[in-house]
Image (cartoon, rainbow, N blue to C red):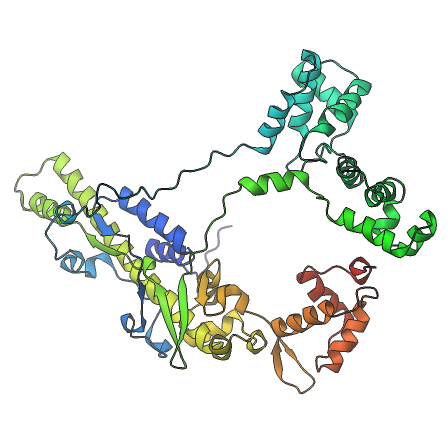
Length: 489
């Protein structure tokens, strides 16, 4: 039986222009520059210069503290835009303005790129120095390929024997593989490579050190009393080896110098470090804060005049072929895309500025003095209410973006934190509590580190009544181990 009913449904749909704007907002400066270059390549109707290094000052934006003037939901339809507003007034081609002011004896400032050798390739190169037969070399190369990025050989001997037989056609036995691991793989550099676990890794490194009394004692501790060492049962070690406390301290010092991830140290030397490009800068000028937006976020873009002239020429033609109609459609599509992109860039600039301006005023005391204890509790909704934007938009602005301050370059999202009540009933930032907790742990007696319940009592005395489980959570977030693992002799 057929029935007919009426159903109302509310749904929200984003236009392609709004989606494009949201994607642009979440990009940090370097990624944004890359996106600009891609758009300039893909759209011939878009022209511009993105090589700008200067910073914009407050006069470039008329927002100030008037957050209500900006509506993040504004969108401009292509048909409502005058194309002349997007054309460049400069009719001189860029190539005529180019100049070469370098003298013949100027140095070439370009830095050559280092051709890094990978960790596994370095190990394979080292195998060439060993005098071994072809069968042993094949097995050794397979074992090197089984070593992970940390430098460990985490697969069992039996699994590797089976894998070599099925995938490489190499037939061997566990005894042979074990011998090659110990006589060849464990002799590779850095020391500790090819270990099956942490205990073996540390023992191999100690074995390659110059033998001294402390090194020999450290080797015995790792080989015979590894569990007692990891649990820091120092009294048991003192009794086991009948040694003085200073002797044990020297042995532990030797162990602490070892690298638990030998492969990681190699890759760290060849890893390319990306420089942080701040998206904003805050300076203190005459006792007042001044916010600037990185000029690389504000390129000079305009619509190609040549494409506009081409469109006008095709439209004025009386008899248009199908090919000309397709050309008109293509040119119009590229012009509209260029206009939408330019508008999205302008809205991105405004959104970034007003959002960071609100954050700066919310955390005014911190940015003025640099005292982290003055960072106030702040959540995304606080800033969203100030600027009249959606919380998701604020999140996109704060994510992966940095601000340069007189106290260092800071990740913006680090200024957001929840609030807790102190003993005076005042809201304090969890960042402030973590800072105090870290200070208390740094000042504790390392021979008798404070457990979480005692840390909770100390913070309570300082005016922050916090439960022990909350102390444990904050300690883990600060990457601080439990009291037992912080113990030293």
